[in-house]
Amino acid sequence: MPGYQVFLSRQAEKFIQNLDKKQAKRIFQEIRDLQNHPFYTRRHDIARLQGRKNYFRIRIGNLRIVYKIFEKEKEIYVEKINRRGKIYK
Image (cartoon, rainbow, N blue to C red):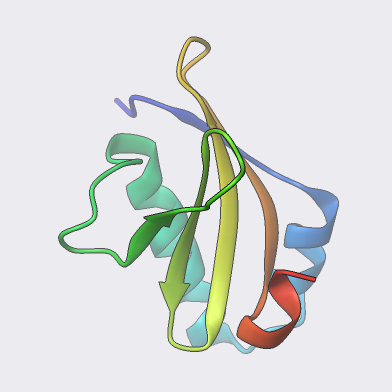
């Protein structure tokens, strides 16, 4: 049973829909792994975002997933998924 519940923003859902099947599958795999290990950085390239409390990012090639963790509620909200040059704007 997953430890955290994951929610996707509308923007994240749309971005995934526009990807090819291979990239979409990779993103869904990373998101599924977040349910059990939202802070586990060894296997995944996860980093805390500076200046934003409880925000993290996952790097998958030139794609980034930005998410926020609500520890008390055991929830993860995937806010944005985009390419490296556009995600932080």
